[in-house]
Length: 123
Image 1 (cartoon, one colour):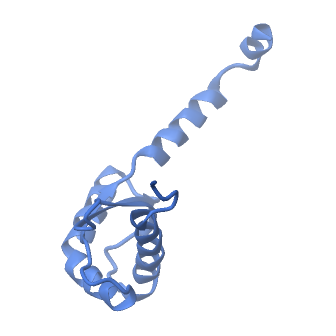
Image 2 (image 1 turned 180 degrees about the vertical axis):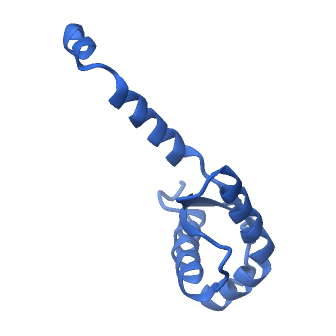
């Protein structure tokens, strides 16, 4: 019998909250843009955490730079996370850019460009 809200999901959820606070309050790097943590996926053995982020008001190079910077800062972020979470071992942190936000914005933009006359003829 599997649990509906298992340990991985609980750890992921708590890790997302704590990482958001750490990035907001504890990281004082001027190179870091406005980063939002969309999702944290933790492996079954809790050894690796994949952290999906978005960066607002940044071009493609800025997004890549932010992900690279976060991966460079991951040992410090992991240390800070270890202070806040009650786990014996803290997962290795790997940051990735989440393209779903950009894809959603692009789809919304394309849908807004569809002429209204073609929408009315389809009804």
